[in-house]
Length: 271
Image (cartoon, rainbow, N blue to C red; front, side, top):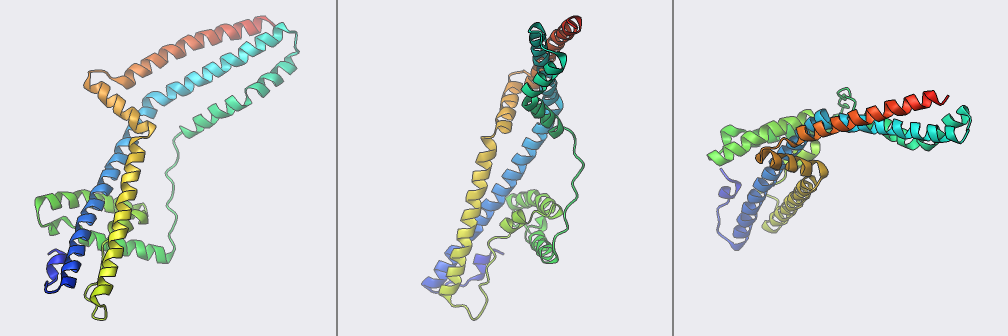
């Protein structure tokens, strides 16, 4: 039963209360739908990023490493022609390319698989809050309590998300989904006090919806999502953009390695 249906309408104040309750219900649905949308979007971006790193990033890294070595040997050969001592040559090479070498090393470290981080243990008060939020949301969004098929589908999408947030100690997501709770049956509260509480809750829901829309827009304008869209659009036209890009990079790496071998041979012959 909807919360609004629990109010027997007689006065203008009661009509305002039910209007606010209906607005809160609608905004709760919107926050839930936006939360599902952002979870889906993040999952899609993560899957694409893993695929991109597996197929492409390693080629860019290899090409950067080979091209950096080529620049180092070009400088060695130039300094050799200027009759600079070998010790000074190596010092100059190290000095000139220190920053570039550090960038390549850092990029390589970022792309190495990391061990699964251990979750920090929450303080008892936060752990209790997390558990209370989870239980409340699991009860509120249980698919068996849905009033129609659309609501059931929404709840079936929300429950894995709620479980994920609980397991990852994502209190922010659980708190956002729990917005809209009101205490209307406290005898000591007057109608104006109840309406002020409803207005406050509605403002919190509006703010949460705005933050979610902003985050969705941020993700969609990000480089990874834009590249994902390009790859998907190319696929519709019958082109595997990542495979094409990988093959192009392989050709560049092969050509660069050939040049690097020639430079290394020239360096050894110049000694």
